Length: 375
Image: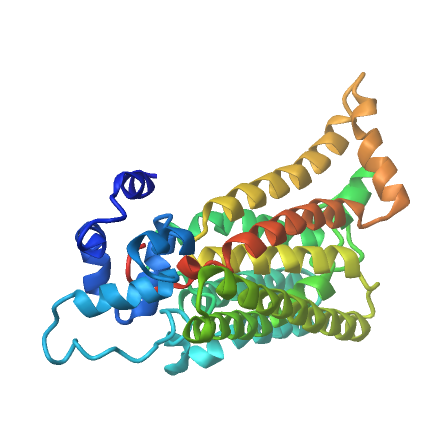
């Protein structure tokens, strides 16, 4: 708002209107590796194509080219730098980063096999070991590559919420139905038919989908970065990037659907398509927004979603207290209509909100500034 206020007070007829703008954004222009990064930074400060006309330029990209040319540099940095992908897109090319997104799926598959072969307490130990191994592998996959948040602090603030949502996919619905029936009568035993029945197929599919998610995120980031080369205006750029975003999102969901169908068939479990797709869409969009610097909305939405699922479980348990039987009526009605209604509705609504938010924020040029350079 301060930039726009200064622009509104600027005199269009000034001898050199660009000079004052260069002074205000000197650090941005000095750090930029190319004019495209300056254009994205200007957009982040509220400067639009219409504003650029005040500085005698047809659009922000043209204005950024002049600003880039005016900043004094030494002989090596004076030449326009090649267009490089943001950190997190290019860093995954270095070994062993390309294999990291595959690790969660591989370790989850190994844990599922171990649980199927083990018996008694050994099965429970295998489940606990598998959860720890997959968690560490997922953390490693999110620290490097297209899904990484390097250069943006406070990226792990949604870790607990994400773990809750995945944990609910693993045993939440089974525990909910058991609680409605009056249980559970014992502790978890790591089986799909115990007192705390596990649902393995959705979690295995989500773990395997980590690699397609990384590929889709890289595809979106690299295509959007290339669009900066050919676009001549912020509106033109946004219009060309939005279909890329929706295409990457749809492609991820298509691959997740195939993985879920395969894991459900192999593990002989019901096809929990709505809830798993809703959760996968939510986690993918939340991570994509986080990678590009938009952390507030994912944090709030994941918090609300996890709270809604925890509340559903809590109301069923609280309904056992005298005089509180009516508390569980909404949840029982939903589960009677559809056994997977709770995750499908909570994650589905959250994913839809994030999709609308992402379609408005990620097509901006300012969303594609390399994260190692502050916006």
